Length: 194
Image 1 (cartoon, rainbow, N blue to C red):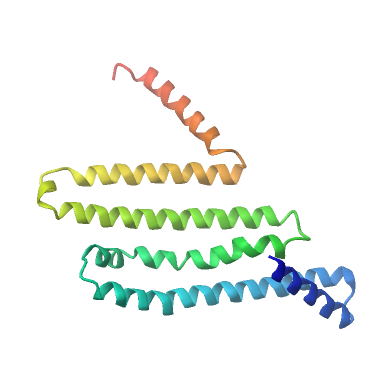
Image 2 (image 1 turned 120 degrees about the vertical axis):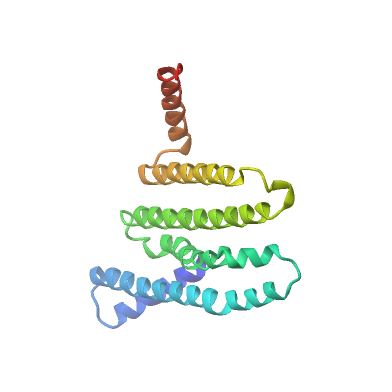
């Protein structure tokens, strides 16, 4: 982010030239860059939601395929607009909080958690589309598709919880998977007769 470092330097020089002390200039620069980041994130969200998505929806409705209409109806693409501000924050936070090393990990963790939750919402919406599409096919009319798709959703919820705990606690997801595997083995031993 060489361009952003130039903006930081320019803001620093502007604040120091206006007579603000060096120790206060850092905090004021942080405040100004945070306001700029929030405005940029809100503007990105607005552009994605109000301009790009409606245009994309029109193109999808014009296409002869039916599956893409399902993606629109189940709000799969709607969730993508929530990724735009989080990506802006994730990319620019290291430069903005460069002088605040204790705050930066918290901001990155919160952004990563938000990105994972939005990704989960997108995946769940795609699963709902797949469930609806398969249930309308004659070959799957008498099959328990709802149970299979519920199981798939539960697996994604568990995987998301593991990723969230790994981010919050700073551990590898493998650590939680191994603990989960050990817990499952103990439960199987306890309830083996059942």
